[in-house]
Image (tube, rainbow, N blue to C red; front, side, top):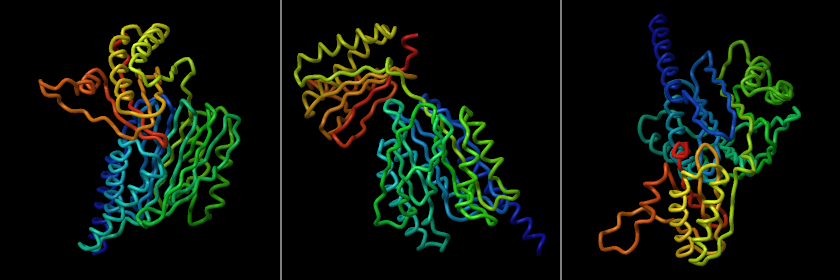
Length: 381
């Protein structure tokens, strides 16, 4: 009997490890805002539900997420996969961190209600998550957390701080809002995210773990990969009783000479002036071959803002891994792509934008919305 139990445990443990590793990111996506390194170590006693991700967003921004599902085994690994997929889908909506965690909280509550009426399996409630968005233009990182350990920031001079980010309740409890904190990060700062298995252990409490983490991080001019290794060397127990996920992200800034912006009067005549200004800017950047398509894209987006938007109209062009055009106004109404009939006089503009760009979309701000479009730089090569 004991041999059969051992074989069954080994088989389930192997399946859980395989499932978990298949659900974690194998390669990090290409982006320019952060230099990222990570480590993931499964527990010796049984696979848990730790997970992490790096998600490029519009406007050169990047989201970092790390989470921890309660429990061990196949159920924890499968639940982790569900939450990771949900965050991928919610991030496509370009929501602020507190709103994204609110949606994730509702999802966990619904999952628990559905599963409670079935086989009595373990609940998801109690899972934790931290979601952060870094903007290399403003160098601001917006963070919210749901019961998750606080992040650490290593300044360029090697000083370490644990910023005061409101903890928020774990996922699934419902009824309580999440709050965000804004961190101003100098270029070259390191943002360190982790799960509780790194700082908590049976032989030490969390305060001791945090001080060990602070000491391990207190050094300047170290690469994210070296920082990951230094942290594990200092804190990793001989036999980890819980999974450990660790992300170290060193910030970069988009240079000021790669950013151009203009205020546009809400008048039809301003469209032609906008086209001329953008063409001059692209010539200065050596991107003349993108001038024609960029003129068409901005003409459509600015015209839409003049016709259907409200308040000041702002145009921003970013030269990063792609050429990004953004048009913002104070309206919260988003345009929708549609197929125009042959007898329609209009309605083809956004279809044209979709054909000329690699991707495009809308993100909402406290003051209105931003319509953005990205073109690959290969056209200019």
